[in-house]
Image (cartoon, rainbow, N blue to C red; front, top):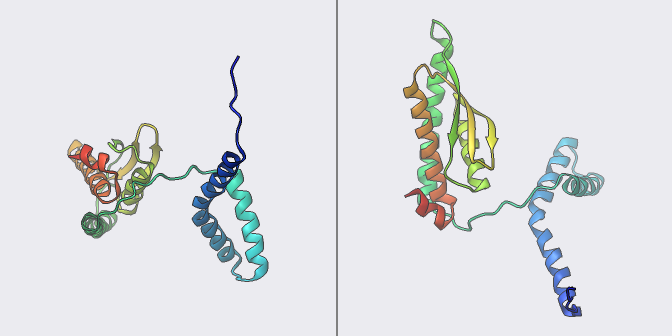
Length: 191
């Protein structure tokens, strides 16, 4: 037989407060859904506000998303380096894709490649996938969250050299984002 310990009223109140505090992390999601609702209806009124809150709460309960765990650190120097890297490759890839679109000859070869990331953070994984998808010439087609692997459709990959360069670019983006937002353990693992 197992013994149960009696629970004091103070512990019950503490658990209720903890339960309500855990819901505070949903406030940004609620505000984002509410703003989306009001923009969809193109109306900022009390009726759209109240109905948006109701619909948002129902959506949040039906389609539960686990909270994203952040490392709690931000490095401005590495954020600037990431931003510079992103903007440079955005401009460079735009010119390259534009040239591929107008140059005569057969269409460029494409490939589906898998890129295994070293990070286990869902947040960094998502940011790497978004960055790669925003740079023209590549698109994330699937994410293996548990294996930390991105599957990408990549334009202009006639040889293995271009595929290796794309994997190196993904690894570079991951390193920049981990040094910007990753935990100290992830930063040390990247070295």
